[in-house]
Length: 66
Image 1 (cartoon, rainbow, N blue to C red):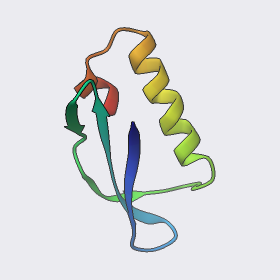
Image 2 (image 1 turned 60 degrees about the vertical axis):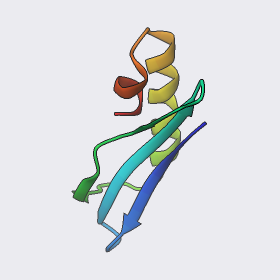
Image 3 (image 1 turned 180 degrees about the vertical axis):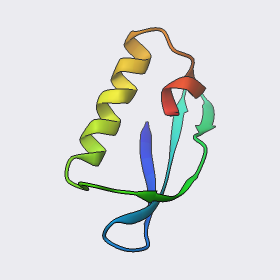
Image 4 (image 1 turned 180 degrees about the horizontal axis):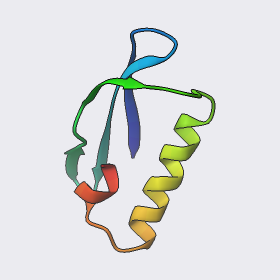
C-alpha cells in the first residue's frame, strides 16, 4: 500500500512526500517542501505509475517510494 502526502500551501506550491508499506515494512520518501506544481491534475496517477515501475523494474522499496 502506498500514498502521497501532500500539503497544499497554494494552488502552485505544495509540500510533497510519500509512504509505502510492503511485506510488513514501512518506507518514507524524503519530504520535498515548497515544490512548485505546474499542473496538479494527474499527480496521483503519475505517482502510482512510478510505484508500479519501481516494483516491476526491481528497484528497492526505498527507491520505489522516492
